[in-house]
Amino acid sequence: MSDAPSLKQISLNQITTEQWTLEEAVQGCVRQEISWISVWRHKLQEVGLTKSKKLINDAGLRVSSLCRGGMFPAATAAERRERIEDNKKAIEEAAELNTDVLVLVCGPAPDRNIESARKWVEEGIEELIPYAAQHGVKLGIEPLHPMYAADRSVISTLGQANTISENMKTDQVGVVVDVFHVWWDPELYKEISRAGQNILGFHVSDWAVPLPDIFKGRSMMGDGVIEIRKMRKAVESAGYHGPIEVEIINQAIWNQPGDETLNQMKKSFIEHV
Image (cartoon, rainbow, N blue to C red; front, side):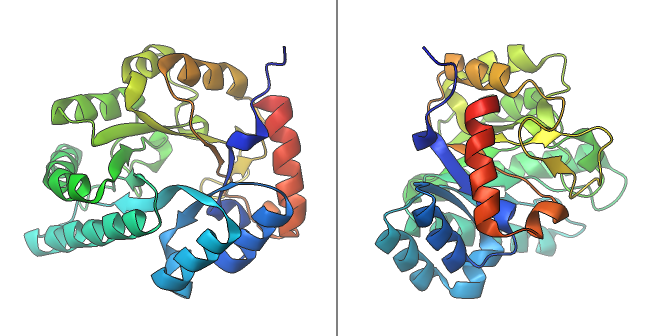
């Protein structure tokens, strides 16, 4: 019996083909027989929600998640309120696209006070729970690698994300495990087990050495040092059997034809995920 996952699980996270519009990404998935797509909000806004929904539905695709909500911390109460309202809009968009997962990139501290920023993250998520429940959408806290703490997220470990999720005492909140962000963590497998049924998503890419760029540094699976298959088996053992998103932010990959990327994705998925 093969250790490889089923290609039925593969999802194109839209940032992997950033050079494509949503319509082009949908058409690419159809050509390459990929049945899942993860939609990014900036791509959604280019096309509009109604047309986006029709494109996806007409193609017979399913949406694994909407990326992203979050970005809760801000310097003033008025700005924090704006962030909450934007997250509510994202919840509505996720529901309209018929996905039950909104990925949360929680946001950096607006000043040097990282403790306050983490408190605002918790308060923001807690406030969104009733609205998310009303729309049938779950909030997936995605911890980001510590090198992103200054500009993208003060939630850096799966342990932190698990603690917030558990503190909410609701199945509306869970965690997203992205191999690029958590592979280094000595507590990783303990925290995957702890997350259990609260794992709402699993994202794959790889960590090349040397890392070509902090933001656009992710590589195709198999081109780096991450034990991706071991992590995939761990999230499955914990209870996650949903779509697996290929999420690669890499300028060289963006510069090549999208269909070439999707072909590489499928091959690397079978060999390394």
